[in-house]
Length: 328
Length: 265
View: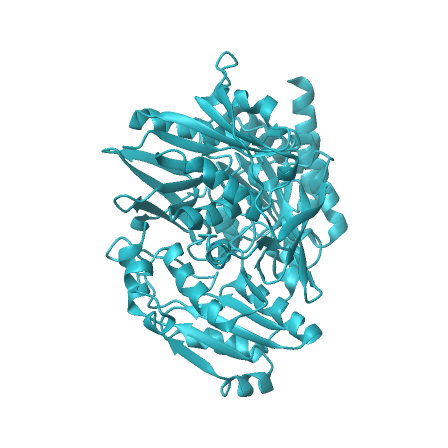
């Protein structure tokens, strides 16, 4: 009989990433539905002192693998360390973040544990003691419900920014157990880490995204979107057309070949709305479209549309946002 | 250099996806099939490695006969040969089952490096590469936006949230491709390339040919399966902000609507 649910936290730059708390919150919900404990796994360098904080989000006990050799995520070293912790128990499920590292880790770990992995899930339910998970496929053009075979270990990676995060309860510290770490011999390593410290918001985790397309006409014109994004605390995205034209880096691309995003507010500027792009941003809570072509397909998906020359409208909109912020 | 590319055939990204009558699969009748774009980046990266180091590029794929067309396309780009694992037992296999079949085929080829997409644009499982590497007991480096290889080690840049890391592995190793068309700029097949591709060797294998038992990688071995599909909630066109307002007026009204109605700013 399964005795726990595991959640794997993601630790970077001295702290847990927010998605870890979302995964812990979801794990708590599932553990309660199954009537089992919630165990956390925290791997990294210097992670011990923060580990108890996973308790704020519902974790009962955290297994900690703390070693300087685990400073950066490398699949070949992380997977055996995490697998050995999971193999000590008889889990009903393992939940992980569907972050960049989390998805990579999940896949290799699933092969090692011979588990069934549902990647990048947006919803998990427990029905008659069995798990069911929902995940977008075809970049969100369709949604798939997955179930596990009898006796299979369900692994679920959770899409950031989607699942509810509990309010931190600072009185609830998790029990911490330090695991003796045996760093496996590896033929791969991280040789450089270059973290952007400018405070730029990551697209997949952004609350608001301002995105530009072919209508932006040139790289330098994105300055007006940057300006608006700064006022809104938003991330800047781009359509494939804008990336292919070399106006924006590939990491900004939203769509089926690119990032699938789910902010509260997506402002599409000069984007006509090709099906691949609509797939990548269609689950945004609110969509605003600014385009001078009233026939642009993006307007059929937008909650609010503005038919205007973007070069006139965006600066005016930025100014209005500024006014609103100063009076709030 | 002996290079293998794992390739999946997927519906074109322009495809409209419809759910079939069984409620578990999609309608495939009218789909146009392409090489998964991320695998196409892998083909391009493999051809660049071959140009630098010499050697061969072998395409390895799982799927029905229609996949031959995509393997021929990769050959027309410059790949040398292909292996298609076509076995009805793989219908309904999960990612781990497919990875077992691919890993068995890779083992026979004894490559120094395997390249494949970090994900496929159809089912978005993002599992194949790391799983194959684990089964081969090889290191893998994920989500490459650049790739350098000197014949004994491979180095990639990997974008992560808010930055990037540089990773290195000793060969043999597997690398999954990230980035975009703008990063990899995959070449088009030339006309002579298309002519030559028709004569390049393509082996079709069953699981038994690879020494595998369908019970360990086919549908019956699947740990996870799709039980139903649903369409996402249809978005309705909302309100066009006009009301005869000028640019500033529309801007003010949009700010008001987002602040007071939607409450998102």
